[in-house]
Image (cartoon, rainbow, N blue to C red; front, side):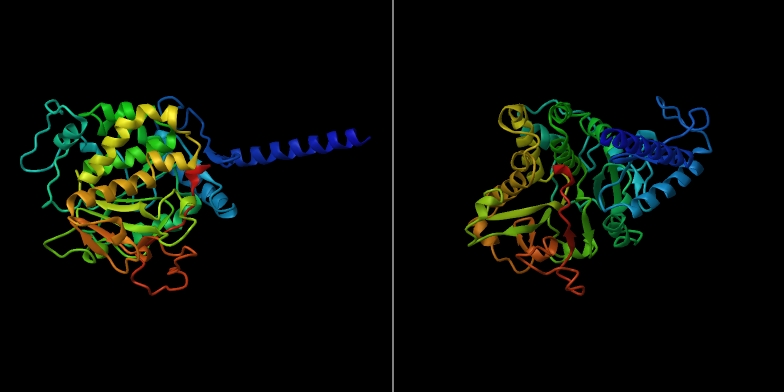
Length: 398
C-alpha cells in the first residue's frame, strides 16, 4: 500500500514538473537545474549550428531576457545563470561585446611609436619572447579598460556588475569590457596569434586555471583594470591612481592588501602566507614585468600541473595560477626593483604607498568588510578609503 501511494505521488510530481516546463517553454524560456536556456523555433530565429538570426531575433530575445530576469529575481542569489550560446549572448547596458571595439580585436598590434606587427621570431627564451611581443614603456598611460568575465548573462549579480558601469559614466572615463565563457576561447586565440605557446598552454589547463591564465595574458597585452565579477566598485578608478602618484608619475601596477595575518598563529591555514594581495582587483600598464613574469612562470610550469596539482583542490589552484602565485610574483618584482624592500614593509599599511612603480593600497581599499579587518562599506558608507569590495562568492570552487 505504501509503495502504491508513493508511486502515485511520484507520478503526480512528474506530471506537475512536465506542465511547468511546458508553461515556461511557451514563454520562450525554461528553467533547468542550474541554467536558464532560451528556446527558439529554428526556422524563425536562430539555427542551432550556425547561430544565424533574422531581424526578429532581437525583439524576441528581449522578451526572453525579461522572463529570465524575473526568474533570477525570484531565485536565491547566485543560483541562476543564463546560457544562450556564442551567437545569443545578451550584453548588459554599458558593456560592449567582445569582437566589436575591444582592444582584443587588435591582439597582434603593439601600440607604440617603434612597434611593428611582425610576429615574435627573434627572441630565444620565453621571457625574451614576451618582452619582444609587448615591450614595457613606463611613460605610456594605463589603458582605460575594465575587464570582467562571467558565465553568460549577469542575472542576479547585476548590482555589483552595474556598479563598475555607474562609477565610470564620464565620456573619457574607463570603458568596460565583459567577456563571457563562450568567448574566452576566441579571445585566447586572438591574443596568441603572435605567440602560439600561449594558446597551447591555455588548452592544457583545467577551466578555472584557464581563466586565471587568460586574464593575465589579456592585461599583459592591453593593460587596464581587472575586476572579479563579484566585486562592487565604490570609487572611480581615476581616483585610485591619484592616491598613488601624480599627473606626471602614475604607477605601472596597482594592487591592494587582501589579508594581513601578521601575528596570527593560524596564518598557515590561509595558503601558508601571512600576507596576501588582491588578485581579484588590480591595475596594470600593458607589458608590465609583473604580468610578464606571471605569464612566463605559469606557461613554463603548466606541463607539470597534471602530476602535481588537483584541479578541484582550492589550495592547488591558488598556488598554480591564483592568489598565492600572484602575491609571490608581485613581491618578488618589488624586491628586485626596490633596494632594501621586504614584504615586512607591507604589514600594517595604513594608506596607499608606492614601491618603485608598484602602488600598494591598504587593506580597506579592496579587502574591506572581512570580520578580522572591518571597514565595511555597509557600516561606513562615507569611507573614501574603501575603493571597491570583494564579496568572495567563490563560484569557481563549485
